[in-house]
Image 1 (cartoon, one colour):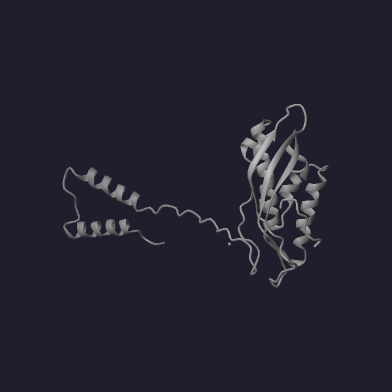
Image 2 (cartoon, one colour; image 1 turned 45 degrees about the vertical axis):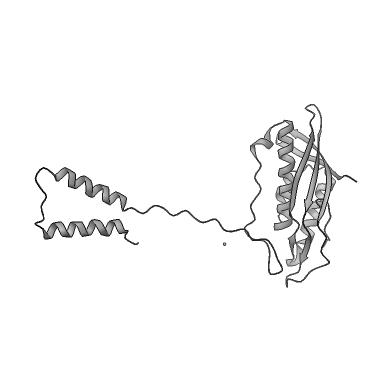
Amino acid sequence: MTSRTLPSARLRYSAAAVFVASVLVLSACNGGGTTPGNEGTSASASASASASSTPSPTPTPTAAYKPADAKGKAQNVPVPVLPEAAKAETKEGLEAFAQYWYSTLSYAYETGDTSLVKSASGPECVFCRGLASGVESAWRDGRWIEGGTIETPSITVQYSPDSASQATIQVLQKQIGIRKPDGSLYQEPTKATNTGSQATATFGAKGWIISDLGLIR
């Protein structure tokens, strides 16, 4: 669940170039000259073949994402990026921001890095700080979290342009297992959850911020 507090707990020549070289050798063997009037055509063909022999740059492969397991931490976890829609002081903007906020919390569970979720939370959000602190505790002493990833399939927004707005979010979180450095479990895993949360958000100079968060019971 999104709100559960954890324990304090990656020169070779091309075939075209070889072909051009072969043509030049054959031309030399047949007299080394060109047919009068075709000099421009031959030069143009050679230039075209040489240009086509230049190898195309190879794209750098993107390292594959690998979730955490008993053998080790998650690898190459995609870093959440604040979408453009979330920068607008609108109902749609808050909806996009709420989704982004939970993606930063999910990222924190997978990586132990709470900087993004902290920067998207106001200093007065006690529950936000508690979640970040719980994640940090779980990752201490060489431990890591297996699972705990979050999805938000439903977000309903009550937008108020003159005061704080609210978002009601359905939060799905996978089972959480805390692994010790040897891969064994630190404690019994916390089961997967499907819960509701209500967030209060305000829009300021830096955009949207979650100023309060709580469970819907």
